[in-house]
Structures are given as C-alpha cells and as structure tokens.
Image (cartoon, rainbow, N blue to C red):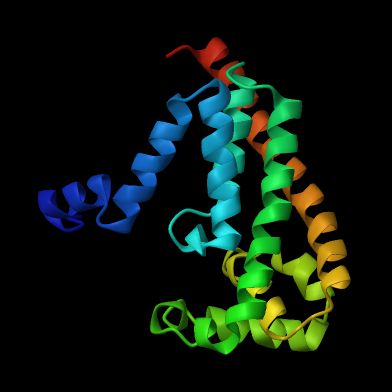
Length: 196
C-alpha cells in the first residue's frame, strides 16, 4: 500500500524545520569528545531551564548522548555525571531568578504561551503539588523547562526550591547519563556480536 509516495519518504527521512535542527545538534554532539563534549552537554542542560531552550532540544537528550559518549570512552562517566548534575542545578536557579524578577511579564510572552499550555500546566502543578512539583517537574520536559521561572514568579520560598531542585537534579542527571551509558554499551555489544 502506498504511504504517500517518494515525496513523503523524503520528508520523513529528512525531517523539516526544528526536527532537522535537533537531528543536526545531536549528530554533532555524538561526534565530540573531551572538554568540548562536556561544555556542549552542560550548555544544553543549563539552557533548557535557564533560557527555555528545552523547547528546541531537551536536556535529557544531551545527557543521554553524553552517556553514550562515555560508553565509547570519549568522556569520563563520573565527570560527565558531575557536569550534568551541576548544570541541572544551576540552570533552574537562573530560571528561578528570571521568573522572580520578570514575573508575569515573561510568562505572558506569546512565544511561551504557544508551548502547548506549558505555563498554565506548570502553574497548575505547582499550585496543586507545591514544592514537590519542582521535583516531579524535572522528569516532564515542558514542566522542566517552565517550572523554575514559574516557581520564581509565584515566589516559592528559595530554600525550598533549592532543596527540591538539587534532589531532582542529582537523580535526573545521574539517571540519564547512566541510561545513555547503558544504551551505548548495549549497542556496542550488539555490534560486536552481529557485526556492522
């Protein structure tokens, strides 16, 4: 059965717009090693929550790809986990301050409002769950990107925010790096067994 002909196949294979950009970023990240790899992974994890870049490329993608690089010996896994956890702590702290100082003006921006109700969803979860929303939001992409600014806007107590931010950053950062490491190791084992 025809699924749209050759044009559809080219569109699917090549992607379009933002999908192509994400593929390009992840492809380049997978080629890196050493300090540049750490820097790019940290920048993407940090930028996701401090600068709302999570709408372009989620931080977990960078952390997982970093784990794959570690499985290939291109970066150190313990150092990668430290870098990811620190970026995952500092990014939301900056996002919190941005929310605290810019408040509703920032969250009312049309560009942020277009993100599938992300602002409304983050505010709703924060009101229902309180500080636990900061912890839980770390594991849901749109909430992870929005929660720090929303927490700052609603004036969630800073110490409470920091506590839940640090706890979730450690679990999230270590978990996604290990997931990438395991995936990279499994792929290498399959490649050795089956061949290329």
